[in-house]
Amino acid sequence: MIDFEQLEGIVGCFCTLLYPRKEQTEGTIVEDLGSEVIIQLTNGKEVTEYKDDIVICE
Image (cartoon, rainbow, N blue to C red):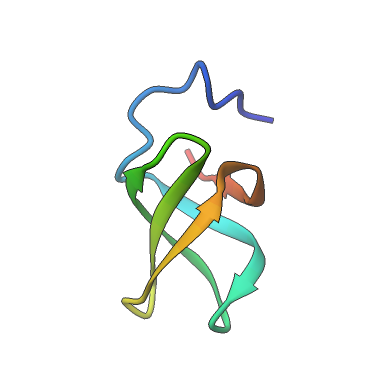
């Protein structure tokens, strides 16, 4: 499990959502809001998710 407090620069990282949104499970982090992030899904839509609800792909 990744400790988000020690992780720097997650904007631009590819991630997988633990709970599908708009029938999508993958996207790119476009903004870090502290305990939440804005993710642009592969279909182009943007959603806000808690960091605990995503897995960052390295």
